Image (tube, rainbow, N blue to C red; front, side, top):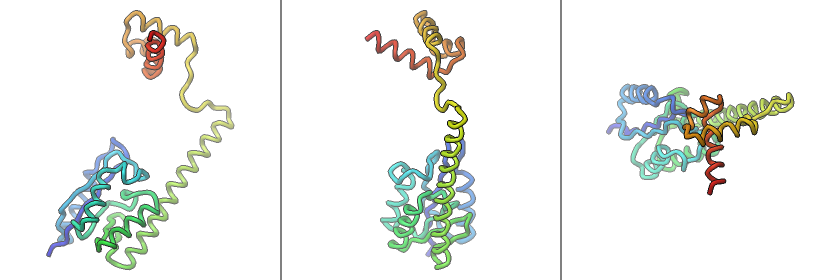
Length: 200
């Protein structure tokens, strides 16, 4: 009987796509003689998001609970998630249903004791890497503040706001106004909203 495999694919940004991951994993399945019965994907969703924010991952978990496949295959451990707690909980769900996990980049198959131990180690490193990124961002922001740099949206002067209002009252559109005054469309939209609120 062929092993029933579910593929899980995920990319963090909308500029990326899951096709490369799918092609590689389908090739692996063919080499092993596995039968791919389901493909779940989450495009443009961070691995730090919970199950409720990742519909593909949620459907995968429900499929595991119903024992619809014998093994889950993913491109890499960080495709599944960034939180060690979530990864370990997911592994626990898989093993409770006797469903194995194959991770292509790490060459891990949790059907073996070594594979299970290695998976937990990779989860530790994925969480550590994320924590390091968060710390670097915080340090960068603190450094910028200490150097007196203004963070966030650049404020526009009252004079510019008045000129935006003038343009809008002549019937000029948001894009035209933004281009004419060298400001962002978001700024023009904010002024327009404040004008509408004042009028009402």
